[in-house]
Length: 585
Image (cartoon, rainbow, N blue to C red; front, side):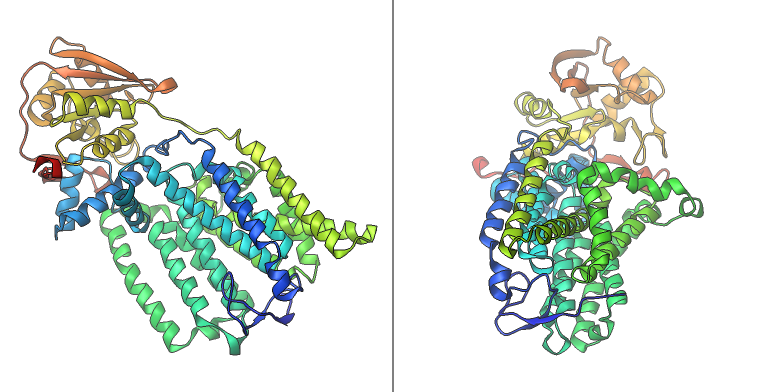
């Protein structure tokens, strides 16, 4: 495979800034030495921050919990970890079940913990708000844009750094950076890991700084500890080393020791998946029918326009062709194509598919598009006999124009917005400050988060209809268990096992698709119940608040059903006990 072997000595190369006196192998796209590398860096950094602030302003009033049911569970799981660390409870399993019995919208076993630990720390500093979690995700979007800018400057051209801010305005980034999801944090860690490994690969063997590799390894593990599919970054690194050499440089004693430490650190995550989230493993195992299906291999191709937009996708195709034909950018183009191909193939083989899984394609496609712009501008400059300075200015102007166009398009990217849940939780804080509340409906996650966020003393509790009256695994058609078949049975369960005088019943087109859910909505119309008020969910329906007028018995233990772990899997536990607050003393 052709590669550019140009070697130049520059004043500083380590990561983003570097140290004096390091010999580095870089492309001829960086001929200006120290001056060329750093010209425009301040302006490009200011642009990235300005575009990031613009991104934050989009959907500023959206709390980030719109993607039900993952987003509110990511938000609440960070609060769970903060509460666990403050409780000093040695038995994590018992505490998790007890916490779930009080606020059943956490997933500490289905996802790795790093983002949730960071989130918990932010809650400790700023308080439990979904906006805290959402802006933590936005900070990772900023990290990804900074890494992209530095990459463009260092390995393509200093003026290419003006395109780095465009990453923040791609449709997929705009959408998923405004939700409390793990895809953008994993993207930030993965891109930083690739940057450092690429820096290590491009240093001459005798002058190699192993800390570049160690940073790359650490950030790769951080990506995996944030989001299990983030492990695709390891496949990209492996493909790079296989195609461009470098495996022999890994065989040092220190490097192997650090790799062993990383494997030991990852072992508990593997055990957690096998024991508590076995279905997640099944999603990554391809089946023969899937591998041979053309629709399977075209799934992400059909969704790339919605992820990056048609203009950038077209530029990326042109950049791939022009880059392979140009000795100046050939090595860089092959690195980007290998990156994109590995990500595409890996996620095409996984049975679970959503466009957000391949966000790591966005920076690679943006960089290929940047090469296309530079090829065009430089070809036009040669034809017009423009000076090198004029060509660089023209390229920067093209990138700024691209950012301006994308900024206008970003404003029109729709995002789901939820309402009514904060107000419903505030109602119960006033009228049922120390009582359990039953919630039944599709959007149980946002309601549970706001209930917990307003209950620092653990005096309230949320009982879900999909744990008390019925249960299923992941979706309503899989491993469904229904525990009531008549209205009288529903009322008896509410009185004897629910322990709730207050009920919040979601009325929407997604809330009564199961027989047990329909029975609940039927029974609350009887004389044993009083409708108190309603809260609008906007176009998605409303939340009706009822009070049960007949006596209820509060059970000492809570029975929790988990069909996802197997039919009939149940745990019996007490809700995590209330705690004294400073104002109570």
